Length: 438
Image 1: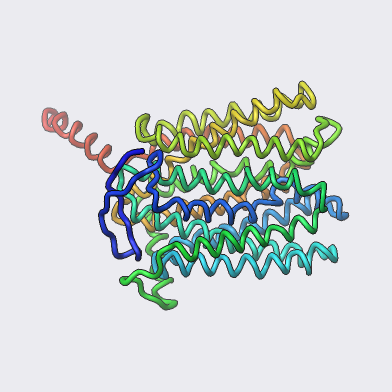
Image 2: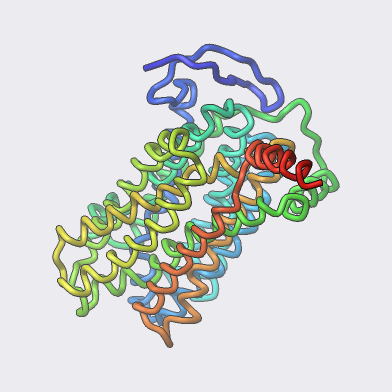
């Protein structure tokens, strides 16, 4: 353990410098708050690895399942966009409490009005509205972290956030489901998600700072804040590029959650649903661990280099392995396990983007984080939408190549994500040459 100067705060606008012990760079005073995130996200991601094939077993088509995830993604994008502004105006506690309330109400509706009576329209409506919940809860907390964490620790702090976030959403959730689903069935498993969300939600709300003294309320203030956040993509085009890279980061994983559960358990590959859930858990267990490690390494290797080479290029290569290894070798658990772990590691290399984005706009960190959160939300819409549109024509193999190409495009775009000081240094280096020419 080490000591560092961190910003401890009881309110967003009241910041004090205190010497706090850290655990691998994480201030001790954030530990319980991170635990609240992982518990909440277990409940939210509990069905991620098996909901698509379950909807098919209810008598609906794979395209109808993809459409549910697509509409859900739209709601997620909206909530992700608003989360930054609301966290800045209301404070993180009220924003998180709003997300918790939304999630509970519409999850109950999803199960009782949609799943149990096999009502497709209500299933889509309730699941989509539930999607408004977790961005308020999780991203509201993330915005607060970017405000109170010193710049030299920011990459590590957001690495810890994504470690716990992914650890709940796509590690413990699938592993828990692989254990409980065969024992109590699908509907009962969905009900257990409420317990996880309530426990994590109450803990997170209780421990997180309240409303800032500087915060103002009212519809006009919220609209003004959203417009100010939106204007950042015009005033600072690099933020717009970063938002697109953030979409590309998550599009493949939100897309393949629609078709991989069906493909991996089909006759073409031959894994059982339990094995698939365990592979998915392993993928994002490695992702969660390396979210933290890339956050630390990014401070040394460079945030942009990490995202470009390991995130963009690394994901393109390893995603192809995830598809071709089981396709060629069949249900070979060990080889497929190696492939999914490699992809999880490379996917985590996008973590420094959460430090890079606000650092590119130090005068409007909230706006930069709003664009980052919007990118994460839009990915949940774009991924399933691409599946619904293109899978009938290009099949699974075409989708995999499409996603790999997107990662390469993201790598190219990352080259342009430069910090203000880098641009100033370049301008200073060019200035003497201009003088000499003149």
